[in-house]
Length: 198
Image 1 (cartoon, one colour):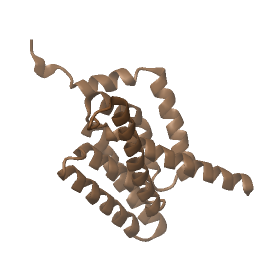
Image 2: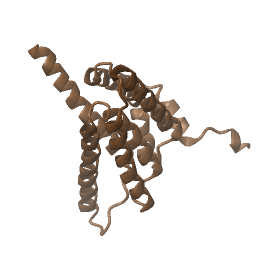
Image 3: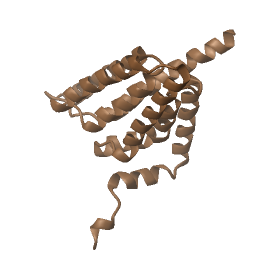
């Protein structure tokens, strides 16, 4: 049997996920949150891409401990488009956003070199930071810090539950996405409160 023609396991998972009503529902809810949070401004393209791929990324990373380039790398392109959109709309280069994203990615890359994170996590951080930093660089920093806090709590819970000297390595992609969508939800709630007051 020719195994070269078999699709990769993560693509099989994506195909199965996209055929479920639950996947469509989650994507729609996340898309609405993204639009409400960013108001259709710069960052929206990246956020909508993340809404589309987040459910699949979570399932794949939990099952296979990987974040496929086919789902993550287009987000980098979306972030570049959003950065260009910001520059055209505001008339200035998004220097603060680029600096914040670069610092966060450099920190994650250092952790990758130390063996603490995968390259998929580094690339996903670049997508998330590239999106949120256009709203505010501190928002991007807050999302990544929140991810590490959530990851620490989860790792501690695993350590206690297993009663071992060392917890198993967790899938960090879902934690990053949870932090991102928590921040997006907060921004959407803030935007809604401003509209209701006005």
